[in-house]
Every structure is written in C-alpha cells, then in structure tokens.
Image (cartoon, rainbow, N blue to C red; front, side, top):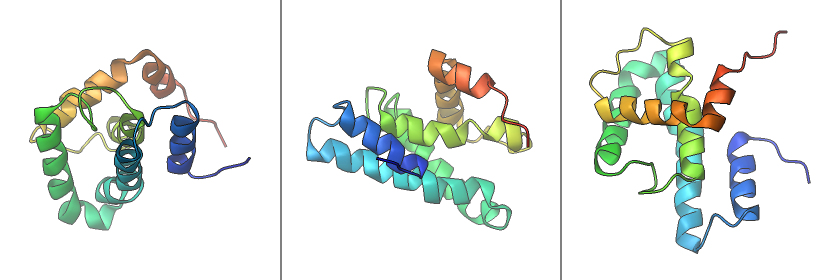
Length: 129
C-alpha cells in the first residue's frame, strides 16, 4: 500500500498499531488530523489569512490545552503528532509571530519539542534541493 498526505499516513499507522480503542477515538484523531492539515495550517502559514484566522484558532487551542495536557485528552496520541508537527514549524519559519497570548499553546509546543522522537525530527535539517 502506498499513501500520500501526512494525515492519511498518521491515521493509517495509528489504526495499524491499535491506537483506536473505539470508533470515537478514531473520529477524534480524524478531526484533529483534518484540523491540522487545513484549519491550523491555513491560519498560520497562509499570509493573507493569518491576521483573520490565527487568533481564533489559537485561542480555541489554548483553551483546550488549559484543561488537558494533550490535544485529545490526558495521553499523547496521533492527534498530537498531527497538530504539533505544524506548531513546531512556527519558531523556525515564522519566528516573528507573537505567541505570548497563548501560554498553553507555547507550553504544549515545548513539551512536544522535548519528546525524544520529536526532538530528533525537529533538529534534523531539511533536505537541500
């Protein structure tokens, strides 16, 4: 099987390795993968939409992370991989963005960056053209 799209690959691997105990677990993961790949990406990385959409997206994310340590609850899941993978591009590609209004998002980003697999990936240099 060959797949493309990071969200599809993440969901396939999570399903293959038994992350989803219930249909609801899978639905939550699908929701966050779609959110990361569309809503979050567009709100942060599309210049002409950032001022309009980033504040609402990050306020909602900050409120969620104020109540729980991870995107989908009390445990690290594929939803965190989907969301954190985009958030952790911000310091590298958009260091000018002011994230101070979103302290729970910033703390979450730090926690994700400190995870060994994430640290190895984030620290890796992108391929040169």
